[in-house]
Structure formats: structure tokens, C-alpha cells
Length: 257
Image 1 (cartoon, rainbow, N blue to C red):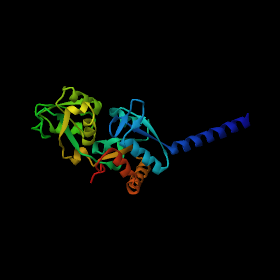
Image 2: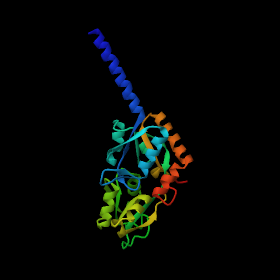
Image 3: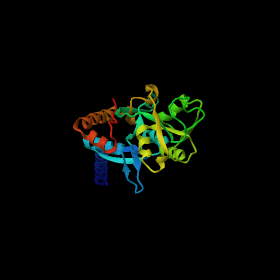
Image 4: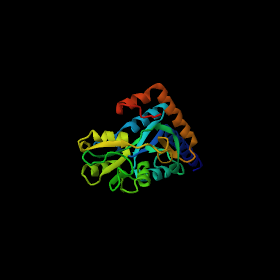
């Protein structure tokens, strides 16, 4: 019996060590899967997009395996905090409000927001006056929603769980305009549903609302993981991998100035 206990203890120790080693070799990445061209879940269940390619490039640089987990946007930070995954790579803007809940890496891209509307809407600008009396669709829990609520006080702001749902309502004429990242809007305008509409203008970012760009979020206090990601971001920027991925999706540099 004494020998059996020792064997069991040794086996348990080896199993724990193997589990820890496996955990270090794999990073679970949380993403939305509903924000093309950055992250999108295809009909056959494949995750594709700029965020996904960047995540894989960073994991390669860090010599770990990426394991992706899809998560609804509204619950993505709570899911990170609960340990469902190790990091969020989902076009999450770095903001002071979010910094109270998570730690961020440096930015890995920064593109401006814009307004899209139907071509025959008569909307010709992005000012408060241009959109007065109009209904604007915006994905909730985003910088675009926060900006819209603070800026377009003479408009009706309608929140949506995803950008795709606001796009559908604009195409169907149920709302007058949508506020989103310009790259997301441009991607949608290329589709048959997006043929209805055009971009009426870009919004000048407000640092206090829009932040310095999109970063990778990790749990509070995980500074070693932040440093690893930052080194990997610098490395793929230096070795040309970032530019290769950028060119796959965009005709311009999304990293920003």
C-alpha cells in the first residue's frame, strides 16, 4: 500500500508537470468572430481575418500554439477575467475605462472611425448637425457607441450586439446611418448588401474616447505576458510579417502614425 501511494503521488506530479508544460506551449486567444475583415467566423466554421493572422504570427514569434475561442463581444472581458482564455485579440481599442479591468499591450493597429449612410439619404457629413433627427446604429460596448452617445445628442442612438446587425438594418432602411471603424465599413460596402450605401465622412478621433488604437488585452497583473506580446509585435513589424498580413487585407497601412 505504501508503494502504491508513492507511485500514485509520482504519477500525479508528472501529470501536473505535463499539464503545466502544455499550458505554456498554448495560448488561448479570445475573439469575436463577427467583425470582418478583422475577425470573422465563416459558414464552415473557420476563423479568418486580420486579427486571426496577426495572432498566429505573434504566437509563431513567441513559439507557442494559438488556440482560438469565440466569444460574444459584450461578454468578452468577463470571459477573460474568468479564465476562459488568456488574451483577447479582437480589435479591442485601448481605453482608460477598459484599463480598469484588463491590461493592454501596445497597439497593433489604429484606423479611424467613420459614418456610412444610404446613398440617397441626403446625409453629407458626420457632424452633430448633419445627423440631427436621424437614427444611428452602433455596436454596443464599443468606442463608437460611446462617441455617438456623447456627440449625437440630437439623434437616436440604437445599439446592436454586432456590427453585422447594424449593417443589415441600414441596408433594410430601418436606420439612417451607422458609426464604425472605416475598414469595417469599407469591407461591408464591397458586398451586395453594402451596395446601398456609402461613407459620408470620417470622424476625427478623440483620444479620451477612441484611445491610441487596438491592443491585446490580458488579465490584470499579467505583465510578463504583456511584455512577450509587445516584443512579438515589434518583431513582426521589423521582419516584414506584419506588412505581409496588412497587404492581404488592406491597400493602406493600418498600423497608423
